[in-house]
Length: 290
Image (tube, rainbow, N blue to C red; front, side, top):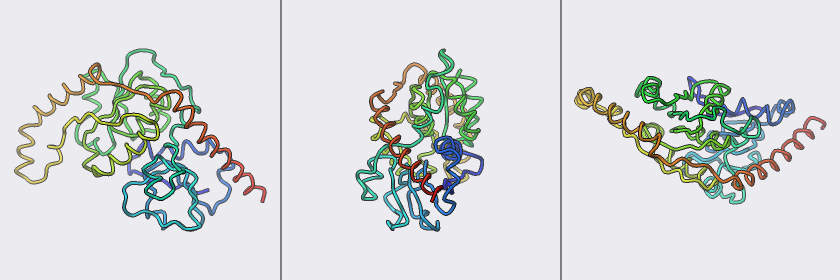
């Protein structure tokens, strides 16, 4: 099948999970049915799918907004979606399960590797240009986790921490799948991708996993202000803003609440996706044999 996913110019962990995850879940049979498109992880359940020819299978994607939705036709088969908001908006209420990145958990050792007190920080890739996160994390004793790195290195970095602070949604989803407590922060992604988009996709997943996705806002809005006067003002306040940002991040080590979905919720969701995986494997076998 053809994997359809968003491709960030320099890489993005959540989207790049598709090429890593699905061949491991479905094996060699994944290459069968070359005229079928597989839509997995990502907020890509929208009108972009109408550009794709042939049959399309939605296996866990979610909506990006309540507009520009795909037209429901016989060529679009929805097996499940990321959460109840996506399911309700597309008019397929029974299709909600959760984000399929939860499947990372069973594929690797689901315990944190360090056993120590390392705290990881993963910004959204949209926020990487705003500040030198690697340097800042080193200054405050956090492990910087770059969402542009390879999936293998990012998972290894996550497993090297016993807590994760993340602006990237799939940083939280995979941490949760690996049973590593996480805390959501908001930096700039809500502004660059749209407040409604960031809020909707996090809430969609949060409702599916029964977790609180309310963020701690770190307040770097000034870095995106337009106009020469504002830019000049920004240069004057940057040292103050960076100091306050540093102080805010330090407080996240002990002052923030870290959370996980319950073991029972995780088991229930994995079982439901497992049923879909088995159905898909049977479909792939029939495609191969028929």
